[in-house]
Amino acid sequence: MKTAGSIIAIALVFIYAIGSGIWVNTGDNWYRTLNAPSWQPPDFVFGIIWPYNFIVLAIAAVIVANRSSDSTTLIFLSIMALSIAAALTWAYQFYRPHNLGIATIALALCAALTIPLLVVTARTSIPAAIALTPYQLWLITAAALSYSYMRGN
Image (cartoon, rainbow, N blue to C red; front, side, top):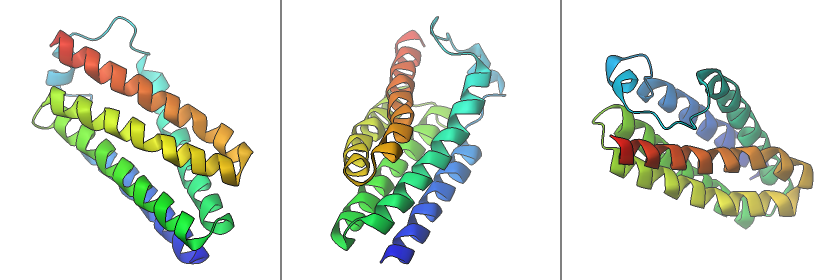
């Protein structure tokens, strides 16, 4: 299960990164015409934090897969898959049909689902959990941004 868990973890992160890349489109006119929250980070921050998040999520998942029991790994990967599905739902709903309310709910769910991932990671490896904490904080920030976009547009 350790090798399979590691492969599944990496595959999930690839799906997450590729799916986000397919659906997230900040260069079109629609996104640029939205009323952005005054506290939104500059664009370059997104280009730094997302690659970091994807890499750390994959590393944490591989560590969990290799150090935890099969049942813990299965639970972790299942929650991770649900969290990624919620994140991709946000990307699609926000940027394609522009359903900002559904997108915000999906991202809040993603942030909530990341809490048990962080807990399991902390029980497995404190350094990995510390490295994964910015991902959790970023999801909370992104959910708040999404809510602000929903309220302002």
